[in-house]
Image (cartoon, rainbow, N blue to C red):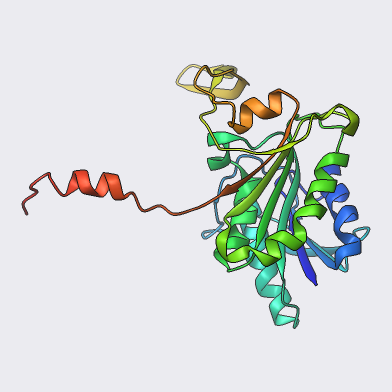
Length: 254
């Protein structure tokens, strides 16, 4: 079995090393990761920029590359390059992300989008995250990543991206694992002025997540905050049947 692993935190991130180590016994692991931090890249592709792919040594990997692009670039380019080398990938993993990818935050996530690029290429795909930007406990995330592998291979035709999120807790403190729905995630957010040069002002973004009254007992963000690991299938069907039915009643004219 050939497994491609990507991330958005960059080639040197601990979470990437932990995931590769966990998967190394399950097959041949190939790594393609950004050469620098690329969080919140969503599904951006470097269509107007050249991409540099550099072969690097990576413990546990049969072959590894750092790429001067986005997480989605990494997967798209690696699938192409590996295929040219006669290596067909069977499943794509992304992570382990330092920070959760919960609810509507999946729309911004480079981690989930890297996995989704695998999905768009007809492959089963798994995104793995620990819900803390200072993540220290990867054991549960690694265990779940390995546990879902035979299932995503068997059920790939019925799944979207399988998104795993775990609390940043020792395994013995995690209350269990639950299948979760995605809900809204909002932030107390602000922009800090970095430099004020009159007509030219430079800002940096900051935010802290809110607890939402609308979260049900099955919502991923709520469950992770309550100490559960969650698994969700994230689909990418962009067709909106209800919205199209509304548009059909607009009586538009050319």
